[in-house]
Image (cartoon, rainbow, N blue to C red; front, side):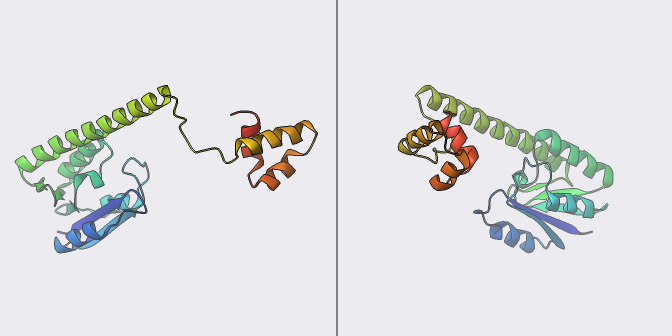
Length: 184
């Protein structure tokens, strides 16, 4: 009966230490990680390897449930497989252990609320971006060229100069220059 640990962080700025320390303290036999990979990513090699390693009687151990599942459907599909194969799930932070009926219930409820939380965050983000656009805020990265550089590039283009030369002298790619000159 092995305890297989899984840890994940979404960005390079985040640190795995807290999760790894907890998984080691929980006496995991093997720990798989995904560093800099979103939970929504279709390919998470560490998570796939952790699932492949599990056998009947084993447990998948996580520091926190949101480290593993993309959606409620994904969590329930994994739980179905675990129940079918005799595998347990343990969430260290939230005290969920699917070896008990109450643990399975909490697993389902927690994942439903996790999906709700992700959906609410997405909805608020979209609403905030729409409100900012309505106020005239220009979204996206700032233009790599100043308005003076764009004016100069347009003048030089009209005079027949090669855009690649203008771009190189301006320190940007030809594609960036074309977008700026054409107002995109």
